[in-house]
Length: 252
Image (cartoon, rainbow, N blue to C red; front, side, top):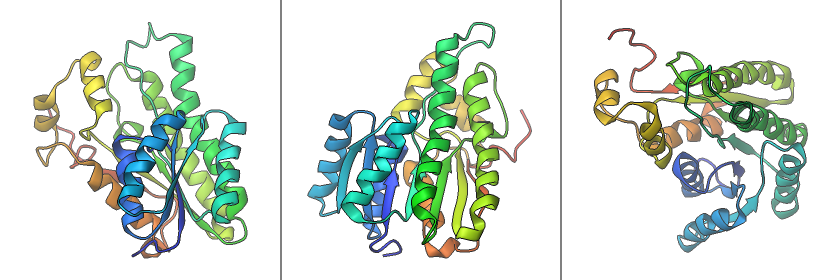
């Protein structure tokens, strides 16, 4: 029970990686806030976890809107009285040639992936000033390396790594630890959507990955669990790759 009685917020946790993180935290004794822009989606996921006996609540919030991010933290404080862990997981992707990406798509990705992480961290940090806490930002291997047709996505994920470092050193004196997790290809509905427009398939991913397989949402969640727990009490400002060796490998 590494997170016993800790209050944890996981943004974008109605499905995929975020949902697995939320469930993994609940398994370890945390009180978890399930978040989505849609209250219906958040409530559906929260209901599934409640049926398993976990202490969870759904809260709708659009993390790209500062007022909404602040409201998420306030509702958590009203319910539980504290915030110990925030996982800034909510994110989107838009795939296409850089010469053709629309202003709307560019802003949507940057606003959700990067600005949303900042607003979430800023809002959480204000409540963590007195007692400390752990903030975990979801970046990507494409925050360190790049492939074509990901101009907005890769820019946002590179920015998250820089933001993580700044917040980590700025808030260290308050005992607020800030780290990032960088998955490579994880089998989720988002990956299936990306394959439809990204020009790649399962065989391409497996061939390029040194461990010769996709990662799982649980493998990402377990790294987040470590960073959220006291086991990582001397860890801050770091980015943890969950990538099967993707970034380390520079071959064809």
